[in-house]
Image 1: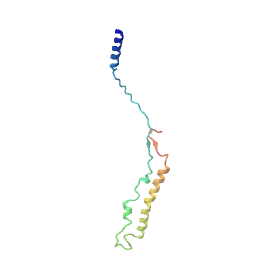
Image 2: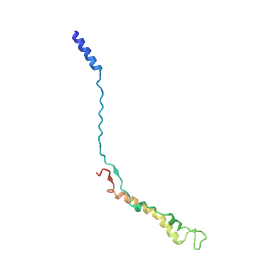
Image 3: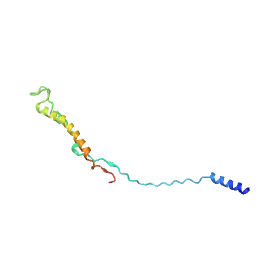
Image 4: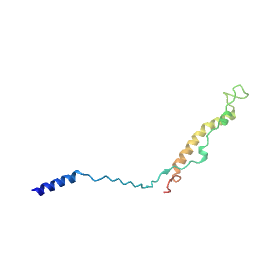
Length: 109
């Protein structure tokens, strides 16, 4: 009986104590492919219209041969000015949908 009580006390004492916590830290580098979008062509990044081009379209209303502040040449330029953003938007869309191979992953994959 003494032995049973002694074994029971030893078991309780063993269960009550906890071993020292050990923390092991190891840095692991994991290469994850990061997609980088292709750069658009320079001509798409240039401004569609410069202020100088706009200033050539409109003239003073009291100038000779002017109706509503626009000459015939200026009216042609004005129509081109209206069409140019639409053409630029179509060019952006065409570039964005067809240039799928231009992008690459950062780590070359």
